[in-house]
Length: 192
Image 1: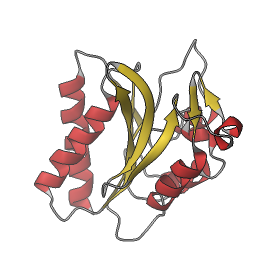
Image 2: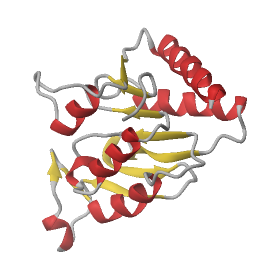
Image 3: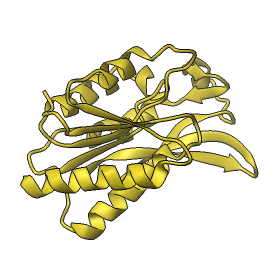
């Protein structure tokens, strides 16, 4: 089980800057510790003009592939799960994300952006996240805010994990939350 204070979960409404915050913390950590061994991935929007048409998963070493799309219409995509108007490409997601969640002895930090409804369609994803949580390796992850007072079961399990610290992001506290998470991770990483 993750030691108390080693799991940092950033939550907040869509578009508040969770991914940006996670990436800024990572950038600051890499600047202060260039030899930091980090595993994980983040998701980013795919836009056509002003319209969001999907999401892609990007590994921390720069590999990327589709996560979900409104524009893919193939025979295969008809069987893909949907979240709203997005079709989720589980094969692409799993091929990139799952190898990044393998617990290795020399890993200093895991980044998972995000643990949400699209990602949790993968039956292999949450067990991999749990292995990361059960390791003693620090984790910085983003999770969605409960919708209509209901949490996604896997997300609720993370939120209620005894080693988790939750940071609820809003437009006025982003810089303070970034500094707080960065400081706490620096303290943890210096002790290991």
